[in-house]
Image 1 (tube, rainbow, N blue to C red):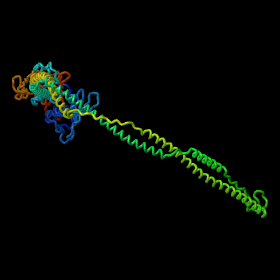
Image 2: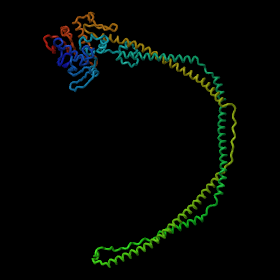
Image 3: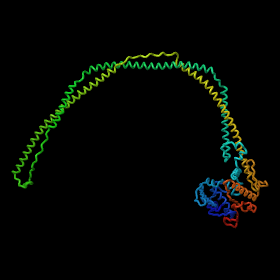
Image 4: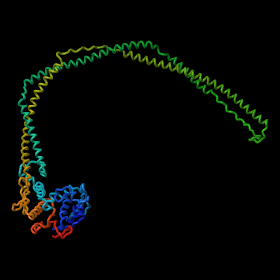
Amino acid sequence: MLTSLTLKNFRGQRSTTLTFGPGINRLVGPNEAGKTTVGHAIAFTYYGVDLSGTNRDTDSLITLGEDTTEVTLATDKATIHRSKQRGKTAKIKVSLKGLPPTSADQSGLTSKLGMSADTFLSQVSVGYFMQLPDPRKLEVIGAVAHVDRRELLVGLLPEFATTPTQLKLENLRSDLAQVTVERRKLSNQVTSDMGALAQIDRFLSEMLQTNTLEVADLSANIERYEAQRALHQLYRSELQAYKLALARAQDLKTRQEKMQADYDKAVMEQKALGPEPSAALIQELRTRYEELVRESGSLARAEKPLPEKPALFELQDEATCLRCGRVVTEKMRQTVIKQREDAINAYNQLAREIADHNKEIQERAIQCGKEILVAGNALRKAELDLEMWKTRSQAIKSRLEQSVVGEIRWPEAPVAPEGSFEKIEAALQELVGKKYALEHAAQKGASYQAQKSTLQESIAQKTESLLFLGKLEDALQELPRLEAQTILDRLKTRGVQFSLVEGTLIVTSDAGLPYHLLSTGRRMRADLAIASTLQSLYGKKAGKKAPGLYFLDDYDLLDATVQSELPEGAQILVAQVSSKATELEVIATR
């Protein structure tokens, strides 16, 4: 139930709050007070449209001179707030009882409401349904009335009940397009299969039967040519082996000649090498070297160290001796000087003798070192000469042993068979190709025969499916009319008759008078009856609840007869012009 409506800068309402109660709520006010604005506000809050349902540019609903409008609609279960700034998308906030508000978009809000704008306004705004074009009227009737399309389709096409399909029957145009595409695709497949079947029939009719005798003759000729090819292959193998053996023999001959030359050269080198160097000479050189080394060691030990310098009394310039305290006389001073000179001369004489001795030892050590170097070089040269002689002698001996070559055996050339291998190979390939073609033709004929049977079965099955799809396509084209007629049969409205003539919805009174010729009062009664019937049908759908709200734009037409036809327990908003009222107000009368 609608409890309140707050309008800010909406059409002519700068800031207005209206409170509603159950039953009839009269919207009382002078002309242009905003009575119809309430209907526009309801349509705007729920669906972002005006009361006509066709104007999606709701900037025209914003008060002239203002940039933004806000509408807050409260019911006993939720509150919806919609704000709209010129040239921008509206912002929606929804808050359920006891929960904080959450932002939403139009698609989400429409999903929560469970119906389209046309379906909602056709039930709430009295007279809205009849202003819709016929296709939209039929959509509204289909939305409020529950019709089992599958049951209707089975009535048109009994085979549909036992044939599995993927049709959901929610969007008949989409389903019809899907069936049409599938039928055309299947028709193309049948046409393609028929073409393939015709090709197979032509091949089978034109194919020659396999000649058993011809195959046998070809097999005999093939065996004969294969034997000749085997002889040529054997000859080629023997010729290859002969060439290899001849190459090995020629190589052996070359090696033999080279080895003979190496043998002669080794013999000459052996003669030029001479006898083995004397071991006694090497021993004599080694003894001389060792003696010189020992002498060098003894010379190093024969060197003498220099003596220590004598300790001398230092001359004092003072008149008194610093150590004993006696008076130093000139005689005492001269005596000390004489002692110093004698000690220095003795030290220098001994140092010169030791230096001369050490010089002689060093000169002999240098001479001995030179002799050691000469003796060592002579010893190493003698040892190297002996080692080189042994190595060269062993190498020459090894070369002489390796230069022995056995006898060379020259291979015999194979005898070539008759005929040309290339011609035999070409003839054999030709015969094998002919035999394969004959055998393949027989196998292909059997395979084509099996393909023909498979294609015939497939064509029969697809033709049956094609006939079913054609019937289904016709049934889907007929289903909207049958569905509309079924809905109209259920749409029993007091004082109003519905009929469908060539896709056009005809609305008349019980007396057969067209709707547009009815008086204003009778038209109001018919509109109210239609809205009430739509809400009644919608409420019968599983999980659905009718709005329970009606908006009438003219209270003066709400006579006693019309009031008696108002649904029990419904909330009615009806506009009433009053010259006494100065502003819009709500008066609950029931």
